[in-house]
Amino acid sequence: MKTIMKLAFSLLFLLPQLQASAQSKPYDDLLVLYVDEQYEKCVDRAERYVDRKDSRRDPLPYLYASMCYFEISKIPKYQEMDEYKRAGRDALKWAAKYRRKDKHMEFFANYEDYWRELNTVAQEVGLNYFDAKEYSKAKSQFQRITRYNPENPGAWQMLALAQSGMRSVRDAAESKKQFQEALDNVPNIAQLPLDQRVLLREGLIRSAEHLLTLGKLDSARTTVEIGSPHFMENLEFRALYEEVEGP
Image 1 (tube, rainbow, N blue to C red):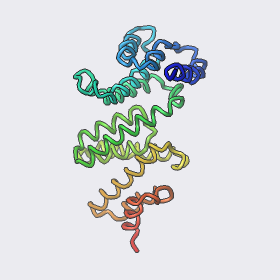
Image 2 (cartoon, one colour):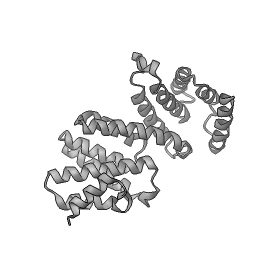
Image 3 (cartoon, helix red, strand yellow):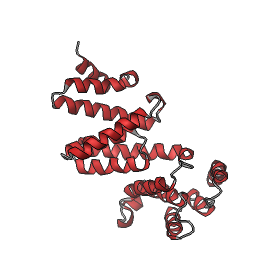
Image 4 (spheres, rainbow, N blue to C red):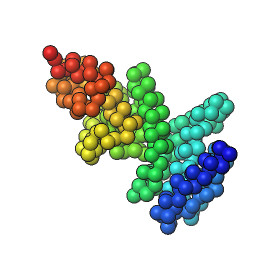
């Protein structure tokens, strides 16, 4: 009964997307495999669509591959298999491929729940790498996020910080520019999805701390002021804000 209800809901959810794109195929077979939790078969079939000339430009097979790899990454039995031990990274890789195909973001907004969950996990991994000073791994992780979600300002900010940790000055400067552009395109930080707000807050904290270590108090103050109207309820952010603003 649970599977039937899940399938019915997914079909209802997918219908507007199918109507929105006369050029894209329905890919009902991928939907059924995904809902039935046959993730390996779904990935195999999605990859076959990607290899076919008549469907390689359609975004949905790439998206299904990403979603299936993400689900696979959560399942213990797959975590022990060499073929799937990097399923989490593969989910990000296929998400980036999907985004390149969905140039007009025809489907992106219809999968908000997926992007929120994917971002939450991917961002946590990246932050853990950064805090452990594994800057190369952090850089790769945040770079993957920017490839499927370039509108995410916190991802660019953390990418710049990781590149700074690697002494990649030119790349860090470019990522800082991308961060500012993404931030400028946000009408209101409060309207960002929760996962993006969290990453922006964490990016502002780590950026300000980094600037303080360099003795750049004014820059650190400017950085925390970006988030002060939105993140003061967070104890770590508030403490940092009070530190840079002074008594």
